Length: 394
Image 1 (cartoon, rainbow, N blue to C red):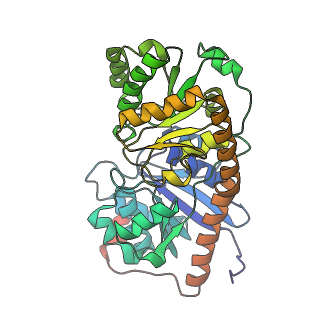
Image 2 (cartoon, rainbow, N blue to C red):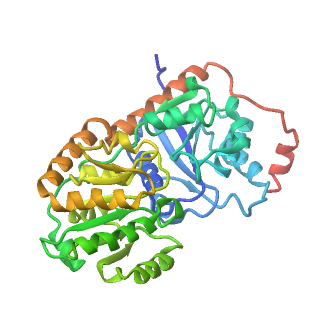
């Protein structure tokens, strides 16, 4: 039984920064939706807050710039002091890397009752590494975003199965819903009858936009009327735009950058493509399915749990350009199949992958661990007796 709380639990979500991206958007939606009578969420960014962090700062405390360089060991006393001053009841690190390590060490030193790590990828770039695995016994829960991802955390990362909890990624099905988006199509230069294939992903190497662009060249050879939209931004944009020109597809490809009208963009396309080398459970897939759009995706990570091959979309072996092109052309040519897949995708998201379910999963997990651990006095560690002496000077 979860004990009655005298005050809301203060939950500190720890990230590197909050640029516009899938995992970051999930975190924003999560903290915004948490029950304020039970939880008081705060954001901690080791580096700059980023666009989404700055946006959240108007709604809740956002702490940033605690890590001032790659080898800045003073991040530890800064984090320790923050957790102690804010009287944190729970720390949830989001992603692997520095924040996962320093967040859990600082939480242990501060005696924070609940320590959890939410992970969003399988393997590079989000493998946790040896140092992070060493802190497993200091961690109450590892949060996976899909069933296959949970098994990966047990088999590959070697986390104890009893500590691995699956909380499905969730999408706001009211915001991401089928609707008319002809105005957006017109603004992109497309007619109502133009077949449009889109990709929604940060411009990072693991997303393999090269396959999307090379595939566009082959698709255009069969169907010159197809157009392509690249939604997302990153340091590789100029490189990818140059590749589109080199391949001779620049006139058919729109690079639109990061956008605030993603639901309209997804409603405006006919097919979403995902060409990644690796993933866990991408939020872009959930958003597209929620908008009633079929998905063509590489069979990686937990993608097959949402892109059910032959039901909500089509899967192809990662890196297989010919298979990607064939799957995409099949959907371009068959409007009724697109409609069937889109309807099935919307139904799947509503039943299993909603934002409300994700929020409830986090709340129940944090409150449940807190109820078990709050009976014991908060830990006052003396592992590093110099910490209190140095904190005042940082």
